[in-house]
Every structure is written in C-alpha cells, then in structure tokens.
Image 1 (spheres, one colour):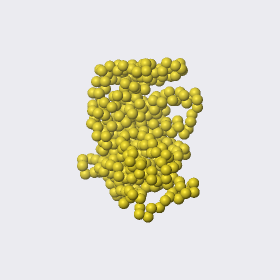
Image 2: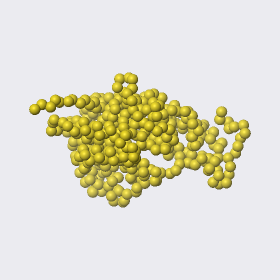
Image 3: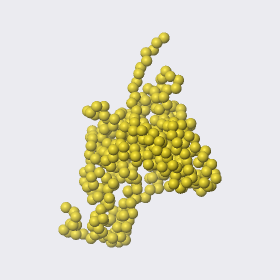
Image 4: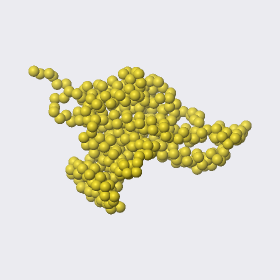
Length: 110
Length: 315
C-alpha cells in the first residue's frame, strides 16, 4: 500500500507540520494535544486486525496529506500568483493622470 | 451563485474606462479562484471599505461574496462545547464564529472542530479563505446555500458515473493504453466486486453504458450516508471527476495521493513525456490533493462515532 503506512511516521509527520505552522509554541496548540491523544488511544487493541485502527490510520494519513499539500500549495501560490489589481488611483498615476473629483459625491455613494 | 449585474458594470464605467477590461478579467479570475458553488467563510459581514472596486458587489450580497482575503483580526482560536447537544463551537478571541449565512458555526464532533480551528490558526497576517477547505465544507453543510435536498445531491453525484474518468479509455498511444489498463482496471475490479455491480470501461466517445441496476445499488448505498457526509462525498466526486475513485478513497481502499494520481493519470503521463511546469502542474496537483484530502477527512469525521471501551486487565 502506501509508504507512510506506519503510525509512527504518520504521527511524526503530522506533528512536524504543526510545528511548521505554529513555530515555537506548537506544543500548546489544540491540534498537537488532540493528535497525540488520538494516537495514544488507538494504540492498544486486543484484536489482531482492528478495523477502527485501520480507519484511524487512513484518517491520519489523509490529514497529513491535507496539511502538507495546503502548505505546498500556498508556497507555490505566493511565489507564482499574480498580485491582483492595483488601486484605481495608483493605476491612473502610472500613466500620469489623476482621478476626477466630484465635490457633490458620485451618484451612487451615500 | 451570484450573477454579475450588468447595470452595476455600467455605473462603474463612469470611472476610468481603461480600468474596465482588466476589472472584468480579474472578476473572472476571482470567480475561478473560488472555484465551485461553495461559499468562502466570513465572520462578520460588516461593510468595510475594501481596496478593490468590488466593494459594492461583495458587501451587500446575501450569501455569495468574492472576498478572498482579509486581514487577520484575532490572535487565539479555541473550541468550546455548545449548548445544543454535543455540538462544538469555534471561538476567535472570545467571539463565536459564524457561517457566511449568519448562523452560528457548529461542528458535530471534536475532531472536525479541531481541524477547522487549526485552519484558522494556520493563517498569518491575512486570512486566505481559499486555503481553508474544511471550513468551506462545514459552511456549505450548515448553510446549504443552493438549497438542495440529500436526494438531489445523490443524483448530482451519480451523474458523474456516466462519464467516469476510470471508464473513459483511449485507444492510442499504446503506452498510455497500457498504463490505463494497469492502473485503472484493479480499482474497477475492486468496486465491481465490493458492490456487486457491473460498470465496465469503454473507448467509445459516449462512454460506458451503466445498467440501471448499478445505479440503483449505488443510490441505495449513498442513501445510507447522512447529509453532511453526502455533501463531503459529492465534493470528492466533483474534485476527482470519478465516482469509482471517490468510493475507493472513502472506503479506505486507496490513499488520497493514489486517488489524485489515478485521477490525473493522463496528465502525469504527458508530464513524464513533455516535462513538468511548476506553476501549473504542481499548483494543480497540490490544490487537488488538499481539496480531496479535506473532502475525505470531512466524510470520515461526519460519518464516524467512536466510543472507548475499557477492558479490565485479567490475569
């Protein structure tokens, strides 16, 4: 199946992502405590093939994928995405014009 | 979905005319940025003077707003138990979070609440609503801005089966044909076994003939999901463009990365041949992964209930 199937690697991966997000105080974050809690709870099971454990593993794999891919997507977005539209005053200023002023206010403004 | 009012555009032509063309192009770009009929989250729809000339449209619109970014206005995110039966609420700096429709934001379980809270926690300086996929899904499930019933959602989801990616095969080049057979056939066989249906693949331009019995089986199976899970599942199907892959992912047969790879199989094949373009291919890949992962997680959290049974230690 997937290469990250081991729970230890998944747990470490998720916690690493949380640290990348939060910085120094990552241990006090909500997600950190919850994730550790969940991993500990699902560890002990009496059965050899535990369905709930497999499901929890799949869910944590999905969450790791969510965190990593959002981070990578935002990194690429910041690098490549256009800056958007400039203010109309700036835009006029580029070609050396100024916006007209209407002392009575424009028609649709209150 | 909010339709662009033509008379409004006429009024703004009173501004500099050289701005108009770029404005329309940017509006289209912003619309495609939001992507689908899910609304981005707004906490308090108060009228702020935003720098973009889209202020008039965005502030006064009922549900649909084209605000894609905002300054961060809180420091701490926390969750709390709500009053009504086990629902969780999110607090931004002591204030309760609301959906874009104005309702109080409530999550049915702690895991979902923590995932959403973490998304808000991730934001720095500016809030980027287009990166908050779990929040968007929760808002859609709570507000239901398109007023659809569960049956309508199921019908919309099953429509994708007629043009399912997995079932649409090419006839040439032979390497791609082989790749499709090797990668897609196992998933197709799995779903046919698991649900006892006949789907089949086709190289025909019209796609495979899906027998009515198959549709009925799937409809009955989808009927067993609750409204929240169905919202998430339809989202995953829409992202992956395939019912078969979505089912394989939700039934935990494949991982998110595998599902995304199978969905983009031909693209990956062409990338392998012609090369990768980072600002297009990688952006698409990560965005698809993020959205699919969010959808899968959303379905998982909405349809599970967990209890802890403690066994006594006996010697």
